[in-house]
Image 1 (cartoon, rainbow, N blue to C red):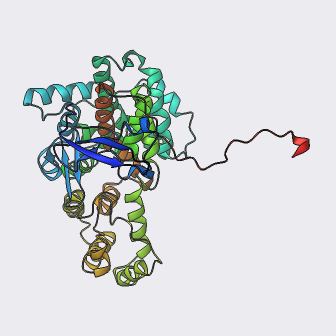
Image 2 (tube, helix red, strand yellow):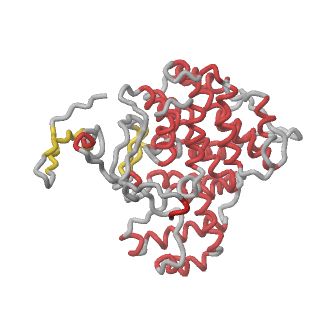
Length: 430
């Protein structure tokens, strides 16, 4: 990657020293000051939660939160959600380009061929309690894949990386469906090659041996959009976790399991569940004004609004809102109480100076929970669906990092404020 720069930032210290720091320019977004040589001057930067730190160079995803842009490899998310299917987007994220018709067919065949999991994984799942949270199962089983598929773990071999990427993309939905079936006490359903990627997932989730399952195209398209909208989101907590784990040379299955673990945190992957619970707590349209006032009075929290990155409308939210209408109409749930509540809450908040001044716009999680609930996916599976979607982003980011010749093991520094040197004192003299 081109690291050349023709601009310099000069840092003047109070002891008279000056340091020249290169300014690196990206194709989009703010310029970045290269501070890698600060350590030679005995200095580090202090940036908790990395609010102002670029941890890597990436060509995958671009976000401009101030104006509400999200691009995958340069393509606006709205165009991809409207015109692509999930596997086409997966090919884009993983390989950098939208596939030709032949490339798409071959990529789809490769993924379909890997959807089965090793039969002993069923026994592995039986070791969990039936009431285990599906995300706990996901962390354990995905991490264990390296014990079943150890023929493609050489991360320095591009072919091994490709095979592992295809296996993860193919098998995570199968494992997710198995975690659901195990939780509800139903038999595992094996994938069928005649179905598309999303059709297969819904088939494994909701079919039973007692009757045939026919995928509903409206629901398939809705879940397709959810997966596309959540496929990648730049250097978020779980993606950064995958990259940090991967920087040590860990195998891809372990790295993706670490991403699932990070995603499980309620501040990251549980936002749509929290938004749904909030709507259920409000209970009725007549209580919206009261709840909004309670938010302003710091009595309640407004879930599904605002975003760490987006300071404008989340570009994914509009797509999700339209999808929500389509699903509820198809299922004859247009008068759905939660959706009416969501509409009224959105309208009230977007016209209230308090929320306008704070740039609290609806985000994708505000509507995705309603859609998932309408499709029939239980609340404890919401974050699992997020993990199914984000697997391709994690894999693409991991693959990019491993291929980067400048990649080194991650090692953040700290500002130490503990005790200075102390000499040990025997216990009888303390």
